[in-house]
Image 1 (tube, helix red, strand yellow):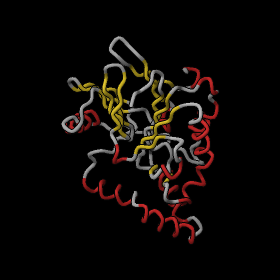
Image 2 (cartoon, rainbow, N blue to C red):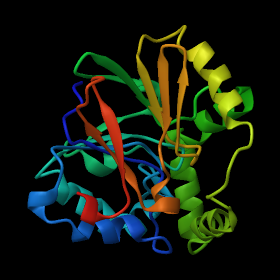
Image 3 (cartoon, helix red, strand yellow):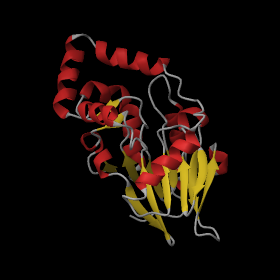
Length: 244
């Protein structure tokens, strides 16, 4: 895949009826101001599971908005740990990459860019958990229970997510990132690794590898724009549509 000049990289908006900031922003952008490409880096929704219809209806407004935008600009969606099974939601209107298909290796100028939601090398426990929650049968059973209990499961998950503190600093994040990238670069070939998930908004350099953890839109209402530069490419953080 080719990253396009002016592409927007948006991560971790955690959209929900109690957190509508991404909808407010995107619905205010005029068609002529849309980018040529929009890369959604996962956890765009706080709760959206393609095999659980009860999680889809509360997000219908945002889903429909993204479908409308996809008629004007290319949207690439990397599933996160809060939003998966999305091919059932968006069909062919949006290019969806499951966790198993990540990283997505893209090119820009002479750079190879690896895109991943970020939940990689998180340990055996996490791998078991994330495989379990992505199991279509599990999601259908939970959806059925949710229906028979008047929405108890969705309400519990919403309550749990709302109690979490999404905006925080990880004190040893640079060391963790260095260790992770040391393993990752043995598996994949890339010049730049970009992810979300951690909500840290940092730019680090480890030898010849550049690392960017994206800003969490839920925290900063900001995203990155891909630009050409003397070094090949750069990323410009934009906090509001006045910077488009």
